[in-house]
Length: 106
Image 1 (cartoon, rainbow, N blue to C red):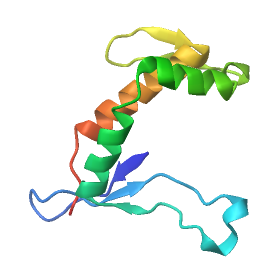
Image 2 (image 1 turned 45 degrees about the vertical axis):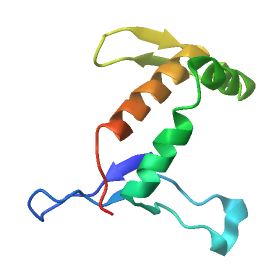
Image 3 (image 1 turned 135 degrees about the horizontal axis):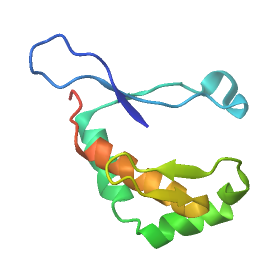
């Protein structure tokens, strides 16, 4: 989701970019890997934080992620493995923690 750029300015927050590719339907109007400001990161976390695990699970079930081969995720912090939609909920939770743990340049 958010990828920090390498920062060589001694302690200043790094530039962040969304890890997004342009869909074919966007044609020339889409922008891949958009820059994300600190205000944008905070806004995203505030809105995404409103989603419960049940909400995320329902979205993943509707997307039929359980039909994707290798839907297994091993949490590197706890060592717990999850499968199917539960794996995607665990990945979502982990990604939200990663985004919360960093800051982006203004």
